[in-house]
Amino acid sequence: MKTIAILNLKGGTAKTVTAATMARCLSAEHDKQLWQAHDASAQPDWSPDKAVSLWDLCHTKDPALATDYQPPQGTRGLWQEGECCVQVGHIWRCLTADNAYSPSELPERWEDLGTVEREEAAE
Image 1 (cartoon, rainbow, N blue to C red):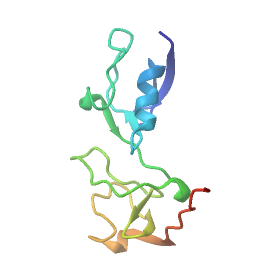
Image 2 (cartoon, rainbow, N blue to C red; image 1 turned 90 degrees about the horizontal axis):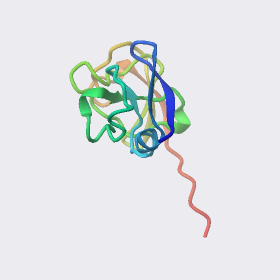
Image 3 (cartoon, one colour; image 1 turned 45 degrees about the horizontal axis):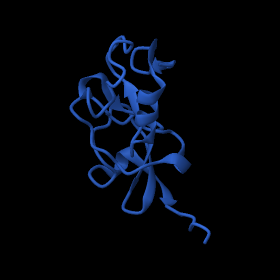
């Protein structure tokens, strides 16, 4: 089974997971990143839905790739400066580190980048 290396963004340590596991992580509605170091060679199916304690939400800094706002899970998934989300039809950029509040809860911690424009699929 092919393995690929990915970076643990929380700790900066390279880890390996199977290509199939990584594909499941990236195909989810929200990308995940490794949270806890582990050797995936013996557990190739330890994906975010099966081994929740190993994974964390991964937010984007690219407004074009922003997904719906997801609340943090304790200290996991806190929004960091520059990360973007979508809420109430607008794209928002976080202005502070370790932000646990949504744009609607604490708008002064977010910059409104404007409305979401979705391209219609060609028929």
